[in-house]
Length: 132
Length: 407
Ligand SMILES: Cc1ncc(COP(=O)(O)O)c(C=O)c1O
Image (cartoon, rainbow over all chains, first blue to last red; front, side, top):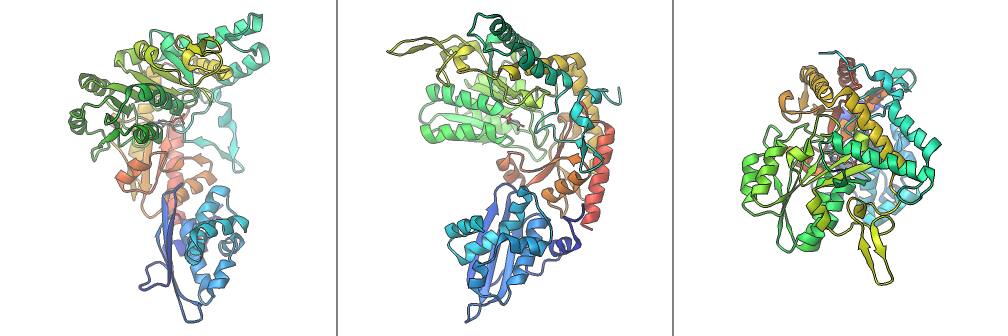
C-alpha cells in the first residue's frame, strides 16, 4: 500500500524545497480545492528570457497535493513560460510515480491547475487541463 | 452491559473483505448506515412478489402494494412517537424534507425583512435551503453561535429570539461535533418567541429514542438510509395544522383531489406532498428498518453506542497529537471528529482505508462549522449498532500506522 505514500512523497511533504513566498514575483495565482478546503498559491520569478529562476508555493493541503506542488515547482526551474503551458497531467503523475483514484487526482493536479492559471488566463487553464 | 449487541451477523456486507484480505471496519455510519438482511429482503420481496403502483389500481397487487406502503408510514410514525400518521410525509431524504418546508411554508408565510434562525453547527442541508429563500425574499438569516465546547450557546439564542424570528431551524445532533442539542428546551423557547421550528433529525432518529409529539416540534426531518433503511426515502413530519395550510410542493399525480381545464384542487395530507409514483420499495424497506431497530430497542441502541463512544473517546484522546472536536462523552452521540497534528485528513483516511478501515475525511457538509473551528477539514469516525470495541482498537492501531508513515 504505502506505495501511495512513497518516501519521496512524504519527504517533499515534510520538507518542501519550494514552500514560501517570492517578493516581487512576476507571476502569481491562487486557487482552492473546495472539496477538501485545500488552498494553494504559486509565485514565479522569470529572467529576461522568460525562463523560470524561482518558484514558490504556499498554502495547505494533503501529502499528495503538497508533494505534487513541490515536485512540480522543482521541475520547472530553468524552463520557459511556453514550456509550462505544455505541461500535462501525465507530467505530474510521472513526477509522483503513483496511480491515483479520481478523488486524489484532484489533489495531485491542484498545483498544475494553479500554475497554469498563473501563466494563462484562468479560464483557459481549466480548458487546457481538461484537454490534456 | 453487553460487550456487543450481537447483530454483526445481520449485516451481510460486514463479511466483505477490503483491499485483499482486510476485514471491513466500517466507521462511516453517520454518512450512511449498513443494511440488515431483513431490510434487503423486504425490498427484494416487494419487487419479487408485490410490485404494483400504489393508490391507483383495484387489482390485487395494487392493493397489496398500497397496504404495505401505508403500513410502513404507520410503523414509522409510531417509531418516532407521532400519533397521527397523516403527518408523516415520504420524501427522498432529510435534504428534500427541509427544502419542502422552505419552498412551501417558507414561500407562503415568510416576507420581506422577516428573520429566520439557524445555527453554526448545521449540515449544509439546513443552511442552503434557507439561504435560497433569503435571496428571494430579502430575509435575514442569523446563526446561533457555538461555545468553545461545541455546544449551542443558549444565551446567544435567547438574544437572537429578541429579533422576533418566524422560524428556527436546528439539528437534533451534530454530524461533526456529535453534540446532542436540548431540543425540547429550544423548541419551547422558539414557541414562546412566536417562531415555528424545523428540526434536522438525520443523526438522531438512527441512534436514540425520539418522540416528536412530545418534543412539540413543528417540522422534523430524517432519512431512512442512516437508520438501516434504503437510500432514496426520507420523512418530513409536520404538524397537521401547518401542513394543511401549506401550498403543495411538486405538482402531478397523487397530489390532487381534482383537476379540470381550469385548474386543480390539492389532495388531503399527506398525499398533497407526495406527487408522482413514490419510492414504494424503499418505503417498505424503511418500514422493515424500523421493525429491525424496534426489535433491538432504541434504548439499547442508545446505551450501547454510549458505551462505545465513551470507550472511543478514551482510546483516541490517549493518542499523541490527536485532538477531538466537540463536547465530552456525556453530551454526545456516536460521532467523533478529530485532527491529527501535521497530517491531513485525506491522508489519514486513505492510509486507514488500505487496512479496511472506512472513515470520512473532509468538511462533512459543514463548511461554515469548519470555518468557525478554523479547520480546512477533519477526520470523522462514526459508530452504529454493528461496531464493537475491537473496531475502535483497529482504528487506534490504524492511526498509529498513519503516524508511522509520516514519522
Ligand atoms: C445532520 C445531518 N443533516 C442532514 C443530512 C442530510 O441527509 P440526506 O443526505 O439524507 O438528505 C445529514 C447527512 O448527511 C446529516 O448528518
